[in-house]
Length: 166
Image (cartoon, rainbow, N blue to C red; front, side, top):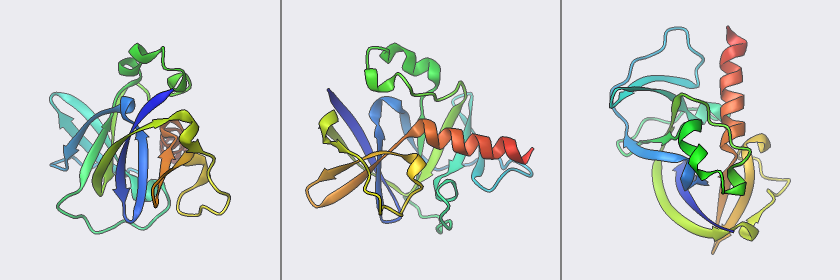
C-alpha cells in the first residue's frame, strides 16, 4: 500500500508521520501558558476558534530544549473524528488521536515522501536518538534515514505524563 509521509526536522534528526494525520503546518505564534503544567506542555493556542494544546517535542523525547528559531513551526494533528473517514486505510486502524487538537513544536518542515509499506523497516536496536516506544519504523531515502513516529504512542506517553502529575 502506498503512503505519503510528511517529514520534518527536530535538531539534526529527520522524523516523519503519515500525512493523513496532519491537519496543517502553522507558524509559531502567540499562545497562553498553562500554569503548573508539565514541561512538555508548551501552552494553548487559539486556531480559528478551536483550542490547540501545544507540545514541545524535545521534552517529549527526553532531549534538552533548543533555542527557539524563527523558522519553528507547529505541526497540528487532526482529531480522531477527522481521521475516521480514512477507515479504509488499514494502517490507521490503531491510530488514536483523541478529540482535542494537538500541535507539536518542530524546528522545520522538510518534504513529503510517497512510499510503499514495504519500505518501512524495523528500527535498528542501536537507534538511541529517540525512545523506541515512539518509533513505528525507519525509512531509508538515499543516504538519509527517516524515523517514522508512532503518533498514538507519542500522545499516550505525553498525555499520561500529564495525568500522572495531577
